[in-house]
Image 1 (tube, rainbow, N blue to C red):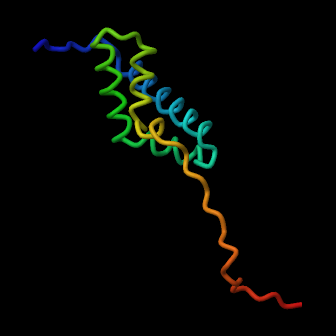
Image 2: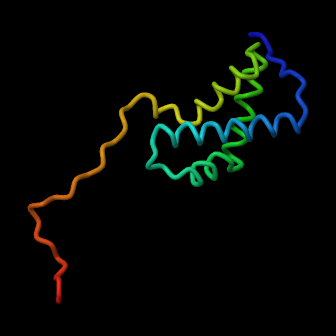
Image 3: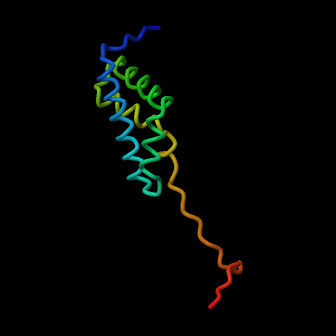
Length: 106
């Protein structure tokens, strides 16, 4: 077993990279699924648990010899691994067989 040594990266550079990864991941997911709210995605991807996850994945990718772009892409894609494996859900259609419960009054 070989030990992975993380490359030297400043806290500022790591923070900037993690922020960009979270933003690009949220934007990419929103573009693929427009029904998802972009602000909520950004809020979710910038929570401490998500940013810690991104930082670990990003630095692990760098330690494996990946370029910063490759490490960032892998880290961002890992936020939502199931999205690419299944087709988007179709919205439910209203059932027309049920009578309307609202009454219209003139």
